[in-house]
Each structure stands twice: as structure tokens, then as C-alpha cells.
Image 1: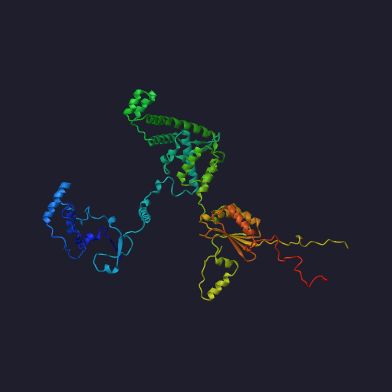
Image 2: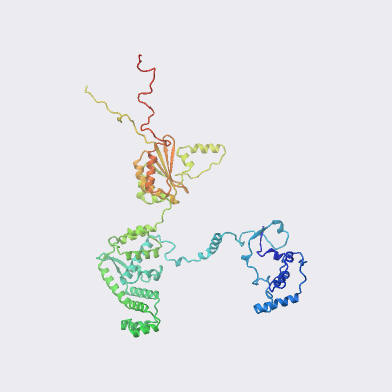
Amino acid sequence: MHRLPRSQRPIEQLLPSVLPLRPCLRNSPCRPSLCATATRSNVSPFSTSAPALSIFSSKPDKKKHRAFVRRWQKRLLGESDPVGAHVDPYDKTSPVRIAPEEQGEEEELLEEMEGGEDWGYTQAETWRGLERIGSDKWVQQWKEWENADSWKKWEPSDSYAPVDKVRDQAALKEAFHRAVVEVITLKKAGAPLEFLNDFVGRHYDPLRTHEVKLRASRDGSVSLLYPSETAVTEFLQKFMSEEADETDVGDEHAELVDELLENGTLQDATIKEKLKEAHLTIAEARSLVGVLKSREVVAKVASEVMAEENESAQAAEELKLNSIPLTDLDLKFNLLKRLTALTGLRISDPNILQIDTFADLYHQLLAASKPQPKKLVEEILADPKKAKKVMSIPNVKISPRRVTVVDKEKEVGRWKVIEYALKERGIPVTGRKVTSL
Amino acid sequence: MPLAALKTVAKARNGVGAFILQCKRLDFHYCDWAGSSRGMKAFLKSTLPRFAKENPQIEITVSPRPNKHPIIKGHYINGREKVVCVRNMTNELIKEKADLLKSASGEKLKRVNKPVESLNESVRGIWSPFHGGKYKI
């Protein structure tokens, strides 16, 4: 079966026999041109019969007619060439050519007619490359399916959290240590924590966190013992400069800001003029001052943090996570964010609410690293306490899979008899081969 | 020879006799995948151990029934079965249904009009003209 597009043009224009039945109004300025073009060009391209001439209309004078048309055309449009003179309607590039979507409905052609003419039709053997027909919804789904390949190019390394979750306990401990060190360092330096995951990736550890030691200070907080001062200072400086770039502040206005810092007020008339010249608003100038001030302060803060931390850490004992409370919600939230970015593990909200100490957080992380059981039986067996509680009850029997008819027959000892009887009659024994429950 | 009191061999239950629970087995079926079994799974995890301990005379079996709604099926000593579909029910509602099946007799539900129902309709029996005292007119 083959499909042919049906034309939307009225059929009487294609049929030459219809035309003579409509006599043209010769005196009208428009009608003659229409009639003339119709008689000349509207012969059906696939018609095999000769164009029939009208018996009612007299033979038209072509020269007079053309002159008449050109005259009116020149008056109306300002052109002397006849309309459509340079347009070949059968050319592929022609604007007159009908767009495929205007071709209308499709009609089926009978198989008998297919063999009659040689139109180069070859029957497809596979569906690939054929036209798709369906509803709008279906077409949309099809397009999405076709575009699915482009999604496959997405790199997992671009994701916020790793696609492959960290399951190894040693790696989890390392990630926990790293998150605690990074978040507490930035928190104590007063740096904005929301940029941490953007600035420090998973594979890049500028702070060398594995060398930093955690200690419990006497006031019940975590102290950090850094191996070298330079690492922390560099880290904080880099971080703060990155954060400054995040706020779209360049060095182009540095001189102006220096002046602002020296003079103080932004409301001064001369400074207002300078701001105008630099196309800056007062709010933008304020933010500039803030950022540059923070850059200056960074180095100072870093050294202070280092000194304080090392002093307190040296005096402190070895870290015992159980004893350190995690009541600061901001710290807890940023730790969770960082842990998710490092490990790909997510802790659910009810579990987050249960976290009161650093130890709780670590245990919740370990619990989240274990794959969730998909079956109820696995879930019961995964928890030894729960399993013991259920399995120790004598009147309870739990099956890990569906209980079939064969299982029921086996339970009462009838299956052997049935199997023997089936074999004796040459009937195949169906059912599960391994039926142990 | 000293006198000895007779030993009691059976407890006198005011003439009523032993009570036997009519429900002998309860089957709990659930689906691991479907959301309608959420309450059933919660029941099996948290409530079932206690329910089973409270009713040691009932045999309890738990098995998955994939791609089906969760059900509880009760087997009774009269040979009948009763099934309750517990789809989308919570843990507490499922406990109620389990209790209902446990305490059911296994018979078909009937309308009860009289306060007392007995196999022997009258303790005195049906009156007969051929028995008892003769009346002289």
C-alpha cells in the first residue's frame, strides 16, 4: 500500500471541461486575466486528455488581452511584467509551490493501481526512515525519544553529587573528616559557606584535610590542628577571591573604591560625580567596598584562625565524637550539604532531626551508605533484632517468595505422589524446580 | 483408713465446656512493589509479632503476592475461608481487620433477630400428648 497526498486545490480548476461552463466577463478589469490564466495554465498536470476548448466562448485575442493586462497591472502595481512571469510553479525553490503541510489529508491507493504505473516505488523492509503518523502527544514523545541520545552525552562528573555513591566505610570516614575540617575552617573564618561546593570539587583538596587533626576542645566544640599555616591561608585567600568574583566585582573600580575607603561617606558630592562617571549606583559601590574590605581582612582572619585553633587543639584531648554536640543548625546543614557533595549520600529529613552530635551524623551517614532493601523479607532479615523477634515466634511462618500450588502440595506431602502419577502417564512435570521455602 | 478427697480431673466451667477458637489460620499477603501494600508492610514489621504472640492458637503465614493488592485470608475449622482486601489501609485498620477475622466463626453472615439461639430450642422439649400426666375430664 502506498500513500499519495491529496491536493487542496478545487478540482474544477484542474478539469478543463468545467471551465467553458463559466463564461468570463470580458469588460471587467480583473476577470479577463483570471479567465485567461485559467484557460492557459490550469490544465491538470497529470491529465492525459487534450484540453477541450469552450464552445460558448469565442477565440480570445491573445495580444490584445496581454496588453490589457499589462496596462492594468502597471496602473495598479507599477510593474509591466505579467504576474507570475518569472515564477515556475513546478520549481522546487518556487514560492508558489505548495508547502507539504498544506497538502491536506492522505488517501490510500489500491494495490491494483500501484503496479500500473512506474513511479519508482520500493517497498520498505524495515520501519527505519519511514514517515511517522500519530497524535500530537505521540509525535512529541517520539521527538523526545529521538533526542534522548543527546542526554547520554551528559557527563556524571558535572553533577553536584557523585552518581556512584560512596559505600566503602574507610572512604566515608575520610569524607566525613574532610567535610568537618572544611566547613569548620570556613565557619570560623566567617566565610560564606554556600560557595564551598562550587569552589572546592570532590577531587581537589587544597586544604589537605587528611593532614588536619580533629580535637575536642574543653568548651565542647571541635578544634582543628593544622599541619602548616600556609595551606590554610592560601585556601582562605583563594576561596575569598573566588567568592568575590562570584559577586561580579572586578578590579576596574579598585582606585575609586580605595578613595571611598579613605574618604568614608558615599553621599559626598564629588564622590557622587565619580560614581556617575563610572556608571555605578551607590548600592554597587557599597558592595564593592564590602568585597575589597573582605579581601584585606582574609589574610588577617586566616592567621588568627590558625593561631587560635592550634592553641586550643594542642591543649585539647583526642576527639570523641560522642561528646561533641551539633546544635548549630547552620553548621549542621552545611555539613550535610558538603557530605552529600562528597559522597552522593542523602540523609532524610526525619533522620536529620535526630542528629544531635557529630557521632549521630556519622552513624546516619553510615546507615545511608547501606543499600536500601527492596523486599520486606530482606528488610526484616537486615535488622538482626527484628529478625530474631519475628523468627522466634513459633506460629509465624514467613516466605521470601510467592507460595505456589506446588509449595502447598509439598507441605502436606502430596507432591511426590502427584509427580509420580504425572511421570507414569508421560505428562511433563511443570512448576518451580527449586521449591524450597 | 483415712479419708481422701476426690481429685478434680477437669475444671468446671459452669457447664459451658472448653472454648475453641474457630479461626485456625491467617494468611497475610502483600506486594513488595505496590503502594497499596504500604500499610500492610508496616503492620507486618511492627504489629504482627505482638498479634502472633497474643494468639498462639492461630497459625500465621506471611508471603508476597506480586502485583496484587494486599489481603488477609482466614481459614476456619468448619472448612470455610474468609478474605479481606486491605489495600491502602493503615497499620491500625489492618489490625482491626485481623481481629475481625480472628473472632469470626467462619459461617456466612446471618441476620440475628433473637437474643438467644440454641440447637435445642426448648429446655423442656416439644410437648407431646402421649407423654406426661394423663388428664381426666
